[in-house]
Length: 156
Length: 174
Image (cartoon, rainbow over all chains, first blue to last red; front, side, top):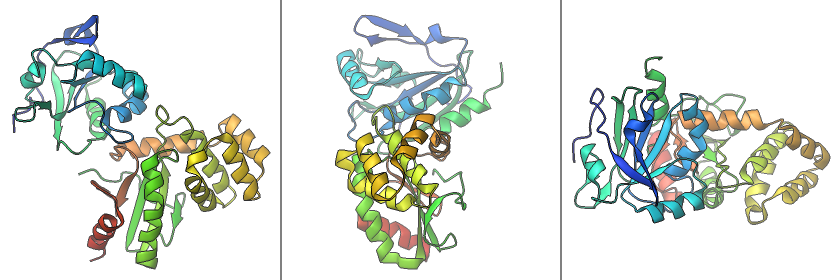
């Protein structure tokens, strides 16, 4: 099991594709909290899978001005089709080339499987990790931990 | 391990005794096919345990995925206001394949509830707040999809076949 980056650590910056012709850097979001949700793969076969659930809870995250980013090793085209089919209203980042590079920096890559862990990070407005959690890969962690972490952020 | 943050109270829709040794709480979505599949299983489980088990249903509509889930939930709450919650809950799941406003109005009439009053309540969003409260309470409790079951307050992770639920509930009875 890799060591997940813990609270208090500066969140490693990264630049990844969000759409086929657009990139996003973590540092662009400085000034507001960021929820970084690593997940194993698009197209999980259940209703209300992890990304689908977060999509429904988006309004609650936004009450904390938080920006949600989903991230997996799937490519941009795959993300695009997945986001469209689930009507996702937040960006999915492709940790595709070099594969899993960002996940590795966060200690959230599963070497043998070639997938991201189900790892959650709440990053504060100054770019420091405020909370992190790694769920067993088969268990969708839900949104309660994220909301609690957002509530515990010092009021800016 | 996720646990139920909103205790079961008399404002819940409950089948059986609030003080039964085990309470099974389901967070469900009327348009979710997995909830549709769980519906007869829960009935079997209730029959198996009889009075030793109470069952609570709370709303968790995934509206982005299931456009009719919210109206269905509000319709069941409308029926609840006239003490007909479980009849409506059952009727919706039993007719899940044809879910939509026409079906809901038809079911209301079959239960001798006013379809007109239902339509008015849906337009006014009279029960939207209650449904939203259920949803948010579920989120705080770690509901991670539908259906999510809690057995005496502990989230049940993994499959929900008859055998799985019977085993998990049985453990709580000891």
